Image 1 (cartoon, chains in turn red, brown):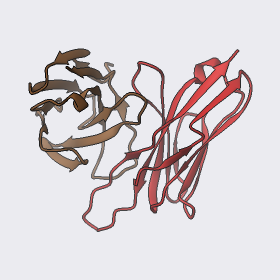
Image 2 (tube, rainbow over the protein chains, first blue to last red):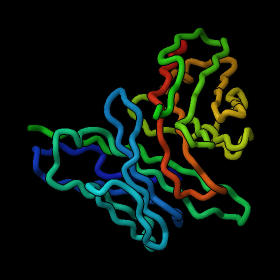
Image 3 (cartoon, helix red, strand yellow):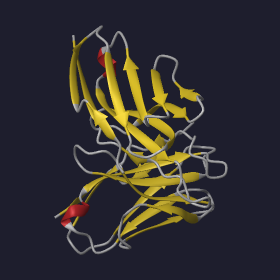
Image 4 (cartoon, rainbow over the protein chains, first blue to last red):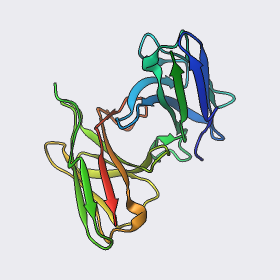
Length: 115
Length: 116
């Protein structure tokens, strides 16, 4: 049930681009992206909702393919400050009408930016 | 505007003991979620509190319990501590009308619990 993130780790030079993927086996209501720096709390980046709505920071872009239950986070012209571990969280469509929504986190993608 | 605060920041306990962790949500937020994060892993959902009631629960034993107060602050209690309970415990707050999943969560700095 846990979403699968790929790659597990990526090393970039400053200015290069990266794509981080998140895949689920369940039909999804939404996908959430967070970044966590070492020793710090996760920080919200973006939410992508079924139906196309997105909420997040202007400098972050992402896509959500509802049919494939996949999301990708695009980091362009990377900066040193982008380093950290990126987590996707998925919210499956509830199985029953009165079921609650639950955010399930992936294992993370570690991003290292070198100057 | 104060963000999410947690106390204590670090804690060392002995196997079998009990521990209480505290969380104050961001101003204006009414929902508190607790997560356990082992080293190198993603957060694992423990439970969520809304209107002083546990609304959702992850796959954690009854040794993990919680409480939410009228001011929306929350406590996480863990009884009969095991070595495997050693982890970073994160609290996240959100404003969540109804039960929709379209909310962003704001995380506190976490409490590092070490069980020896």
